[in-house]
Length: 272
Image 1 (tube, rainbow, N blue to C red):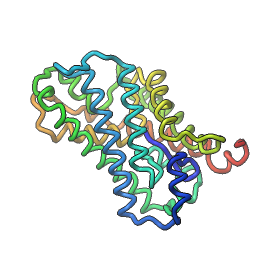
Image 2 (tube, rainbow, N blue to C red; image 1 turned 180 degrees about the vertical axis):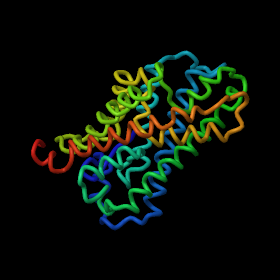
Image 3 (cartoon, rainbow, N blue to C red; image 1 turned 180 degrees about the horizontal axis):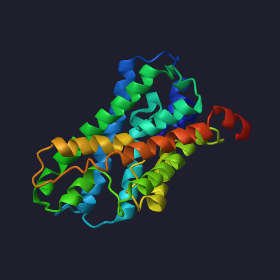
Protein backbone atom coordinates (compact mmCIF):
# COMPACT_ATOMS: atom_id res chain seq x y z
CA UNK A 1 0.00 0.00 0.00
CA UNK A 2 1.40 3.36 -0.91
CA UNK A 3 1.51 6.28 -3.28
CA UNK A 4 3.88 7.00 -6.05
CA UNK A 5 6.24 8.60 -8.51
CA UNK A 6 7.12 12.11 -9.54
CA UNK A 7 4.30 12.41 -12.04
CA UNK A 8 1.86 11.24 -9.37
CA UNK A 9 2.77 13.53 -6.49
CA UNK A 10 -0.04 14.66 -4.27
CA UNK A 11 -1.50 18.12 -4.57
CA UNK A 12 -0.03 19.18 -1.25
CA UNK A 13 3.35 17.63 -1.99
CA UNK A 14 3.42 19.19 -5.44
CA UNK A 15 2.75 22.64 -4.05
CA UNK A 16 5.52 22.21 -1.51
CA UNK A 17 7.90 20.98 -4.21
CA UNK A 18 7.15 23.92 -6.51
CA UNK A 19 7.80 26.50 -3.83
CA UNK A 20 11.26 25.10 -3.14
CA UNK A 21 14.29 24.74 -5.32
CA UNK A 22 14.55 21.14 -6.47
CA UNK A 23 17.81 19.61 -5.26
CA UNK A 24 19.16 16.09 -5.45
CA UNK A 25 18.14 14.12 -2.36
CA UNK A 26 20.80 12.11 -0.58
CA UNK A 27 20.42 8.38 -0.04
CA UNK A 28 20.08 9.08 3.69
CA UNK A 29 17.22 11.52 3.15
CA UNK A 30 15.45 9.04 0.90
CA UNK A 31 15.85 6.35 3.54
CA UNK A 32 14.51 8.48 6.39
CA UNK A 33 11.49 9.64 4.38
CA UNK A 34 10.36 6.18 3.34
CA UNK A 35 11.25 4.65 6.71
CA UNK A 36 9.16 7.15 8.65
CA UNK A 37 6.23 7.03 6.24
CA UNK A 38 6.10 3.23 6.29
CA UNK A 39 6.47 3.17 10.06
CA UNK A 40 3.36 5.37 10.37
CA UNK A 41 1.52 3.17 7.88
CA UNK A 42 2.23 -0.03 9.79
CA UNK A 43 1.76 1.16 13.36
CA UNK A 44 -1.74 2.32 12.38
CA UNK A 45 -2.48 -0.60 10.04
CA UNK A 46 -1.42 -3.31 12.46
CA UNK A 47 -3.13 -1.30 15.16
CA UNK A 48 -6.54 -1.34 13.47
CA UNK A 49 -6.39 -5.11 13.03
CA UNK A 50 -5.35 -5.51 16.67
CA UNK A 51 -8.25 -3.27 17.68
CA UNK A 52 -10.64 -5.53 15.82
CA UNK A 53 -9.27 -8.91 16.97
CA UNK A 54 -7.58 -8.77 20.35
CA UNK A 55 -9.15 -9.70 23.68
CA UNK A 56 -10.66 -6.82 25.67
CA UNK A 57 -9.96 -4.23 22.98
CA UNK A 58 -12.65 -1.57 22.96
CA UNK A 59 -12.95 -2.08 19.21
CA UNK A 60 -13.06 -5.87 19.24
CA UNK A 61 -15.41 -7.26 16.62
CA UNK A 62 -15.87 -3.99 14.73
CA UNK A 63 -15.47 -5.87 11.46
CA UNK A 64 -13.87 -5.98 8.04
CA UNK A 65 -14.90 -2.53 6.86
CA UNK A 66 -13.35 -0.95 9.95
CA UNK A 67 -10.10 -2.67 9.01
CA UNK A 68 -10.45 -1.44 5.41
CA UNK A 69 -10.93 2.16 6.49
CA UNK A 70 -8.20 1.91 9.12
CA UNK A 71 -5.68 0.75 6.54
CA UNK A 72 -6.82 3.38 4.06
CA UNK A 73 -6.31 6.19 6.55
CA UNK A 74 -3.00 4.66 7.62
CA UNK A 75 -1.78 4.88 4.03
CA UNK A 76 -2.94 8.48 3.79
CA UNK A 77 -0.97 9.47 6.90
CA UNK A 78 2.09 7.54 5.75
CA UNK A 79 2.03 9.23 2.35
CA UNK A 80 1.87 12.66 3.95
CA UNK A 81 4.81 11.73 6.19
CA UNK A 82 6.91 10.58 3.22
CA UNK A 83 5.85 13.28 0.74
CA UNK A 84 9.45 14.22 -0.08
CA UNK A 85 10.06 10.86 -1.75
CA UNK A 86 6.60 10.46 -3.25
CA UNK A 87 5.22 8.40 -0.37
CA UNK A 88 5.71 4.99 -1.95
CA UNK A 89 5.70 3.02 1.34
CA UNK A 90 5.61 -0.09 -0.82
CA UNK A 91 8.27 -1.91 -2.87
CA UNK A 92 5.60 -2.85 -5.41
CA UNK A 93 4.98 0.85 -6.07
CA UNK A 94 8.69 1.56 -6.27
CA UNK A 95 9.30 -1.31 -8.71
CA UNK A 96 6.22 -0.29 -10.67
CA UNK A 97 7.74 3.15 -11.17
CA UNK A 98 10.99 1.54 -12.30
CA UNK A 99 9.09 -0.67 -14.76
CA UNK A 100 7.15 2.35 -16.06
CA UNK A 101 10.30 3.84 -17.55
CA UNK A 102 10.23 6.96 -15.38
CA UNK A 103 13.57 8.76 -15.04
CA UNK A 104 12.86 10.07 -11.52
CA UNK A 105 10.90 8.83 -8.52
CA UNK A 106 10.34 12.48 -7.61
CA UNK A 107 12.21 15.60 -8.71
CA UNK A 108 15.74 15.20 -7.42
CA UNK A 109 15.54 11.42 -6.92
CA UNK A 110 16.84 9.56 -9.96
CA UNK A 111 15.53 6.10 -10.77
CA UNK A 112 18.64 3.97 -10.36
CA UNK A 113 19.71 0.79 -8.57
CA UNK A 114 20.96 2.40 -5.36
CA UNK A 115 17.89 4.58 -4.87
CA UNK A 116 15.56 1.67 -5.67
CA UNK A 117 17.23 -0.54 -3.08
CA UNK A 118 17.17 2.33 -0.56
CA UNK A 119 13.41 2.75 -1.01
CA UNK A 120 12.73 -0.96 -0.55
CA UNK A 121 15.04 -1.47 2.45
CA UNK A 122 13.71 1.64 4.21
CA UNK A 123 10.13 0.49 3.65
CA UNK A 124 10.80 -2.96 5.08
CA UNK A 125 12.69 -1.70 8.13
CA UNK A 126 10.06 0.97 8.75
CA UNK A 127 7.42 -1.75 8.64
CA UNK A 128 9.28 -3.79 11.27
CA UNK A 129 9.52 -0.82 13.62
CA UNK A 130 5.88 0.16 13.04
CA UNK A 131 4.76 -3.36 13.93
CA UNK A 132 6.84 -3.31 17.10
CA UNK A 133 5.23 -0.01 18.13
CA UNK A 134 1.76 -1.45 17.54
CA UNK A 135 2.66 -4.45 19.69
CA UNK A 136 3.83 -2.16 22.48
CA UNK A 137 0.53 -0.27 22.35
CA UNK A 138 -1.43 -3.53 22.67
CA UNK A 139 0.98 -5.63 24.73
CA UNK A 140 -1.45 -6.39 27.56
CA UNK A 141 -4.06 -7.49 25.05
CA UNK A 142 -1.59 -9.73 23.22
CA UNK A 143 -0.70 -11.25 26.59
CA UNK A 144 -4.33 -12.21 27.17
CA UNK A 145 -5.20 -13.32 23.64
CA UNK A 146 -4.98 -17.09 23.08
CA UNK A 147 -5.84 -17.52 19.39
CA UNK A 148 -2.49 -17.95 17.65
CA UNK A 149 -3.89 -17.43 14.16
CA UNK A 150 -5.46 -14.13 15.19
CA UNK A 151 -2.26 -12.98 16.87
CA UNK A 152 -0.37 -13.60 13.63
CA UNK A 153 -3.26 -12.08 11.70
CA UNK A 154 -2.74 -8.74 13.40
CA UNK A 155 0.78 -8.67 11.96
CA UNK A 156 0.68 -10.47 8.63
CA UNK A 157 -1.78 -11.63 6.00
CA UNK A 158 -3.00 -15.15 5.37
CA UNK A 159 -5.42 -16.81 2.95
CA UNK A 160 -8.91 -17.98 3.78
CA UNK A 161 -8.46 -20.83 1.27
CA UNK A 162 -4.81 -21.82 1.04
CA UNK A 163 -3.78 -22.28 -2.56
CA UNK A 164 -0.44 -20.56 -3.27
CA UNK A 165 -1.08 -20.16 -7.01
CA UNK A 166 -4.51 -18.56 -6.67
CA UNK A 167 -3.47 -16.60 -3.59
CA UNK A 168 -0.64 -15.14 -5.68
CA UNK A 169 -3.09 -14.32 -8.48
CA UNK A 170 -5.30 -12.46 -6.00
CA UNK A 171 -2.38 -10.43 -4.64
CA UNK A 172 -1.19 -9.70 -8.19
CA UNK A 173 -4.60 -8.35 -9.23
CA UNK A 174 -5.04 -6.20 -6.13
CA UNK A 175 -1.59 -4.70 -6.47
CA UNK A 176 -2.03 -4.13 -10.19
CA UNK A 177 -5.11 -2.03 -9.43
CA UNK A 178 -3.24 -0.01 -6.80
CA UNK A 179 -0.11 0.68 -8.83
CA UNK A 180 -2.06 1.37 -12.04
CA UNK A 181 -4.05 4.00 -10.14
CA UNK A 182 -0.88 5.47 -8.63
CA UNK A 183 0.70 5.80 -12.07
CA UNK A 184 -2.39 7.12 -13.80
CA UNK A 185 -3.86 9.47 -11.19
CA UNK A 186 -1.12 12.06 -11.74
CA UNK A 187 -2.42 12.41 -15.29
CA UNK A 188 -5.86 13.55 -14.16
CA UNK A 189 -6.85 17.20 -13.90
CA UNK A 190 -7.30 16.96 -10.12
CA UNK A 191 -4.88 14.96 -7.99
CA UNK A 192 -6.31 14.44 -4.53
CA UNK A 193 -3.26 12.40 -3.59
CA UNK A 194 -3.22 10.97 -0.06
CA UNK A 195 -6.97 11.28 0.50
CA UNK A 196 -7.70 9.63 -2.83
CA UNK A 197 -5.28 6.76 -2.25
CA UNK A 198 -6.98 6.15 1.10
CA UNK A 199 -10.23 5.44 -0.70
CA UNK A 200 -8.44 3.29 -3.27
CA UNK A 201 -7.07 1.14 -0.42
CA UNK A 202 -10.54 0.91 1.15
CA UNK A 203 -11.98 -0.13 -2.20
CA UNK A 204 -9.33 -2.79 -2.85
CA UNK A 205 -9.78 -4.17 0.65
CA UNK A 206 -13.57 -4.27 0.43
CA UNK A 207 -13.63 -5.72 -3.10
CA UNK A 208 -10.50 -7.87 -3.43
CA UNK A 209 -9.28 -8.39 0.13
CA UNK A 210 -11.47 -11.32 1.11
CA UNK A 211 -9.33 -14.18 -0.21
CA UNK A 212 -5.90 -13.19 1.18
CA UNK A 213 -6.28 -10.11 3.37
CA UNK A 214 -4.83 -7.86 0.62
CA UNK A 215 -1.20 -7.37 1.51
CA UNK A 216 -0.63 -5.61 -1.85
CA UNK A 217 2.70 -4.53 -0.40
CA UNK A 218 5.70 -6.81 0.28
CA UNK A 219 7.00 -4.59 3.10
CA UNK A 220 3.58 -4.42 4.76
CA UNK A 221 3.58 -8.21 5.16
CA UNK A 222 7.26 -9.12 5.51
CA UNK A 223 8.17 -6.42 8.04
CA UNK A 224 5.40 -7.22 10.54
CA UNK A 225 5.92 -10.97 10.00
CA UNK A 226 9.57 -10.52 11.03
CA UNK A 227 8.41 -8.50 14.04
CA UNK A 228 6.00 -11.31 14.98
CA UNK A 229 8.85 -13.82 14.75
CA UNK A 230 11.23 -11.89 17.00
CA UNK A 231 8.90 -10.31 19.56
CA UNK A 232 8.34 -12.09 22.91
CA UNK A 233 4.59 -12.53 22.42
CA UNK A 234 3.05 -14.96 24.85
CA UNK A 235 1.81 -18.13 23.13
CA UNK A 236 2.16 -16.62 19.67
CA UNK A 237 2.81 -19.78 17.64
CA UNK A 238 4.62 -19.81 14.29
CA UNK A 239 4.94 -17.00 11.75
CA UNK A 240 3.77 -19.09 8.76
CA UNK A 241 6.92 -18.63 6.70
CA UNK A 242 5.64 -21.20 4.22
CA UNK A 243 3.10 -18.65 3.00
CA UNK A 244 5.29 -15.57 3.35
CA UNK A 245 6.53 -15.59 -0.26
CA UNK A 246 3.01 -15.10 -1.65
CA UNK A 247 2.48 -11.51 -0.36
CA UNK A 248 5.97 -10.70 -1.66
CA UNK A 249 5.86 -12.28 -5.11
CA UNK A 250 2.24 -11.45 -5.97
CA UNK A 251 2.52 -7.70 -5.25
CA UNK A 252 5.85 -7.44 -7.08
CA UNK A 253 4.35 -9.09 -10.16
CA UNK A 254 1.28 -6.84 -9.96
CA UNK A 255 3.34 -3.69 -9.49
CA UNK A 256 5.72 -4.45 -12.35
CA UNK A 257 2.87 -5.40 -14.68
CA UNK A 258 1.09 -2.13 -13.88
CA UNK A 259 4.32 -0.25 -14.54
CA UNK A 260 4.73 -1.92 -17.92
CA UNK A 261 1.09 -1.45 -18.95
CA UNK A 262 0.69 2.08 -17.59
CA UNK A 263 4.25 3.25 -18.19
CA UNK A 264 5.26 6.70 -19.32
CA UNK A 265 4.87 5.85 -23.01
CA UNK A 266 1.34 4.51 -22.53
CA UNK A 267 0.30 7.49 -20.39
CA UNK A 268 1.50 9.90 -23.07
CA UNK A 269 -0.84 8.16 -25.53
CA UNK A 270 -3.98 7.71 -23.42
CA UNK A 271 -3.63 10.57 -20.93
CA UNK A 272 -5.76 13.74 -21.13
